[in-house]
Structures are given as structure tokens and as C-alpha cells.
Length: 311
Figure 1 (cartoon, rainbow, N blue to C red):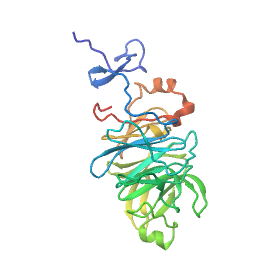
Figure 2: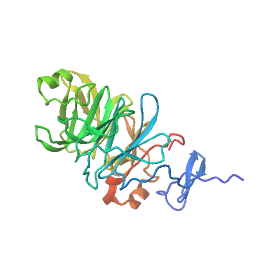
Figure 3: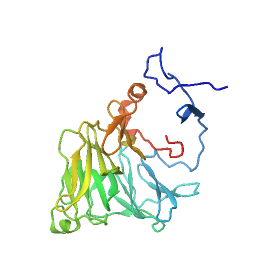
Figure 4: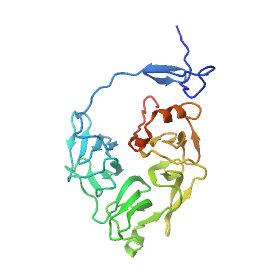
């Protein structure tokens, strides 16, 4: 017997709700049906401490890898592995509420956080991570597009000595993430390297997403979203506010999908396709989510995309 169950709409009135106020232990299989959530199954052994960032990657031959980091170590697991390999090149000291960011430049994996110098690992070659560059700053977020590694929310520990710059973006030489010449120098001009402070009242930079529709990078702040486009010399990269868009309050909530980037704003979940942003939870789940979540720990939210079930 077919039993119709409407969309999960806990924010709607209890009576005359066009959907359902409570739906448990299932996931949306189609627009008109749900499937059972299966039990959890361990694939890899546990890290030695709380995971503070992870990312799945593929090399140029299509082989899969997963990288992860905790407060003091970096780990790697290849396809079919049952345990993590410690691939740390040093003993790290990342803060309790900071996260590792992983970016892929060709077959090079670049791991970074705001406290430790950026690390580099070559797939199918490296045994451990090593320092990316002695002249590179530290950063919270990074993404690769147009043969550039664009980094953001910077801790400038280079010769500039500017310290923490949460609204700064910085990129090394085109095609070479190990080359970080002094900004404004003739060496930097020759390889199109520079930095930019995106000044304003938009708050801290909270994430970077590459290749989003017509945009090379979407840069998320607490209270705004900017588009970034490669424009060539002399500006190299141009930064343009996407007017009227809500910002992202939880950096780990950003998940890139075929339709765009989904992220948590101050009042709703949003989908940004590079040009427009639409709320996808208002009147449905946003109020319930914000009533349930511990807002003290928005910075520890993580998210991912299920490509098989389109969730």
C-alpha cells in the first residue's frame, strides 16, 4: 500500500501543515519518497585525536586518496586502505577551533591552517608532508582555479609582518604555488603574484569556492559574498561584491554541488550559483535548525555532498 508522506517542513504550523512536521531515520530518495538510513560502518581506523579537516582527492590517473588532520598530525589513506598512514612532516600545533584546509594543485596536495606553515605532499611520490615555501604566508582557506592558488584569511608571517589579516586574499606565482615573491616587487609583477585586502564591513573571510558557474572564485565573508575573476595585468584578479547576498556564518557548511555552492547564512541555508543566491530552507527547516544547533560551535560544523543520492 502506498502511504503518501509530504516534504519535511518542521517550520510550518502544526495544523494544516502541507508537509510533515517529524520525519525520522530516513533520507529523501525522490521528491515523493523516502528511504531508510542504514547503520554506520567503519572503513578506516580512527585518528589519534579529533579530526580537524579532511578532503578526498584524485591523482592524474584517477586514483583516490583521502587526507585528514588533527591538532598535531596529518594523515593519508589510499583506495582500499583500512588504516590511516601518518604522513606528518613535523609536529603541528593547530588551535582547538581551527581547521586544516586542503587544496590540490596538479598532483600536489597543499595543507594549511592559520597556525602552522603551509605543507605540501606529492601524490604517489612523497612519504611525508614538507614545507611548501619559506616565503609563503599562513592561511585558513584556499582554492585553485585558472592555474592560481588563491588563499584567504591570512596570517602574514612573511617579511611584511602584517600579522592576522582576515579580509586579505593572496596568490603566489601563476602555475607555481611554491613561488611567493614579495608583493609589489618586480619579481612578483613578472609572475602575476600579489595580495589584496578586501576592505569593508563584511566581516571575516569564511571560505573560497573555485569554478562556480561563470566565476573563477566565489569568496564568502560573514556578511557578504564576492566574485573573483582573473583579469590579467596589472590587476591580475578582480574582486566584485555580489550585492544583496547573505554571507556565510559557518565556514565548514560550504559544500560545492553541480548546481552551485550551498552554505549556511545568518538566517537560512542558501544556494549560490555564481550569479544569484536563493534561500532553500526558509519556511521549511531553517527555524528548526537554528533552534537545535549550538550556535557557540558554528565553527565546528562540517558538510559534504552525497553525489549518488544527490543530497
